[in-house]
Image 1: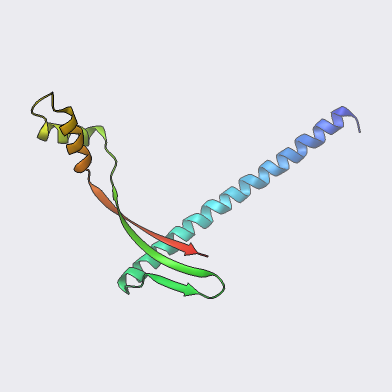
Image 2: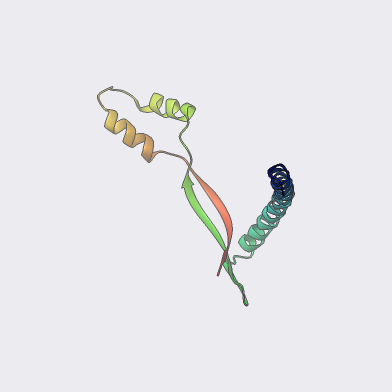
Length: 115
């Protein structure tokens, strides 16, 4: 096989793999979207029925988790909080403590497979 043929062959294989990867990525996106829909329904059902964990033979456990997490600090929120609190420029430590202590929280729900 000549170098030119070898190069063409490698390029052809590379393109085949690239095409397969692209197709599989599309399938993965669709599967993840469907899993998200089912997870949302499952979360709702488990929450309504007050079920935290479901054991599945030979697979493990599916657990419903709910946790409070802090929201991110954006410029608008920071200006708003500083406007409410900032009285003296020398109190930078107090201001930063105030900001960190008063961050909003939000609830995240998650379905997790434990093995």
